[in-house]
Length: 561
Figure 1 (spheres, rainbow, N blue to C red):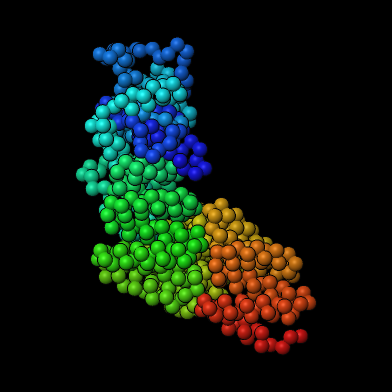
Figure 2 (cartoon, rainbow, N blue to C red):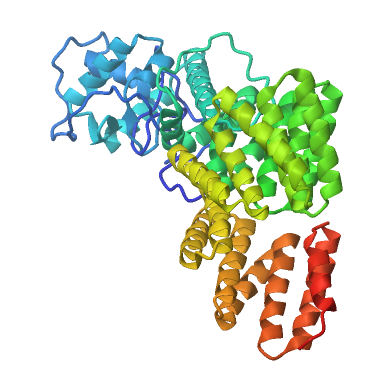
């Protein structure tokens, strides 16, 4: 079961609709028990063109308005059960795309038979275009599916998994802001048209509706001996899960993919699963685990001669090294990735590496180099039409412009980034842009606006469970309180930030919190204790290579008044 989902996932032999009861089968039907799956799990639908209306199961059972088959069953009911038998989930099915994939029939036939089920009160429409079976009909379908011959069941299962993989890849490509290494996939010949993902908004909505069902499909693939699907579906979901804060689900999915690929000896898929897993471990602030996982991915890609995979792993590893305070290692990793991307002619990868490199250069105080890197990345993203990438580059550019006191341009950059992230539905990106916007507002004396921006960012970071972002937002709110002559109000925020940053080993935010607490004590009549905390902050800043260390040292050399 998907943790916290309640009525989500896959069961009874194969996935069906979201939130209610049908099982899947094709041409006599896939069904039976899917290994390792729990009852009450489901898969959601997708096609917005399903029939409308509402209804429920009437007393006395369904009537048959059409011809009965040799077995005495109503034609419409029989055709429907062939698609849906075997499900024990509680979710409605939507439209006709999935029946088409399962049964190998045309969309017109699929919709006609769905309408037949609905007209005979065998389906209820829970929301527009989404349907579910009555409990008794669902149980009847499950029993029929369990008796279905495997020779008919397995091809239908494969068609459904192939549909999900293809649609997830199509959606993932719309959402990508970074270059990603390829997965080998299951190697099937048929590549069905999804027909539902025209643009970013449609892709985001589809992924949001299907994410639990996609996990169920991956789990089913893993437990039924289909490692290609078990690895490729999580890879296709990665950018969506990353940007929307579904990190616990991402960890679970990538571990499923890793195990399936490793046991099957699919080394390219194993490397991709490691790369995605390491990225999520970084987002959840487990830097040691992220670095170790990404090094494993890097070794595998190197052994495979996969330069694109190496470049992606190196970029992610450099990001982890920067967050852990090792700016030299980060620069080396990302510079190496940049060379690989350029050698491959991969401009999206080049832009991602340049953005990451600019971030490292900014943190190290090399503003000129950072400006060159980020400006080049922004140009590439715009040339490629990548709005997610453009938003990320604008956020970094705005942060750099704020440091160099180019406040008006910084405000324009951050407001444009915020607009893009909100349009894209990227909550993590929105929090990042709000953080940078709040910093510019703070530097220009707009303290109320800055507090509002950082407070909203704090809410978003908490929503997506980003502990390092939360610590940063707490430090930012505390800085505002201290700047407005209210150090007693700042201390609780600094204390929370320090505890959080210490727990996750986010050294930069740990040093910031110590510095803030130290300044508060210096001004509230405890200068020696405050200066000791500032020295602790300096030690951390020196360890991570931050130019802030020298600035604080210069301040401490001044005589105490």
